[in-house]
Image (tube, rainbow, N blue to C red):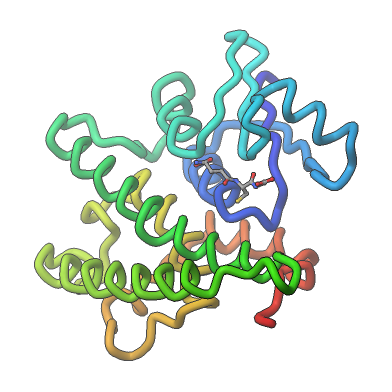
Length: 223
Ligand SMILES: N[C@@H](CCC(=O)N[C@@H](CS)C(=O)NCC(=O)O)C(=O)O
């Protein structure tokens, strides 16, 4: 098999790539990386010196592809499946990428900050940074909920870009799932909450969640 995904089943950015892979249907070999194991960490660093996953390795094309958005763009371009994750229309493609960026930068990164702070030892916590991250999440939820109403898409049972699932939904699934865990979306954002439920029921994301289940105990609790 040409494609190998270096990943961890609990990692939110890996979930994004996995949703893309399961939507796309391209066969791949999953390689679970334990970052606590020095040899496995060194192997990941050899592939991508930043040392973060997901990383996709394509032996056939001799390419190493880091960054979840780029993994999905790469799949769409070189291993197109039945679902087109980046629309052909350039304007729609731009909107898709904007939503992907919004979800990564203004939902996913703040939630990562909150979870990361739980792992810091006492005395090295960053309460101000966490409060800012929570405020960012609340602002982002409100923008998304409002945007979804304006678009008439999510309010009517659709996906980020309308009827077709796209890169933006791959980004939304982990960002909203984990975001909701650390800063609940709540009843004030009904469209966003309903959209998250639809994502959870979608077979690609339901599969990702099922595969992560054995590892959920490793998710850092609030302290
Ligand atoms: N911008 C990157 C972010 C990747 C990322 O932050 N991955 C986290 C897991 S969700 C990671 O590798 N963390 C390991 C570490 O920081 O040592 C992407 O979109 O793939």
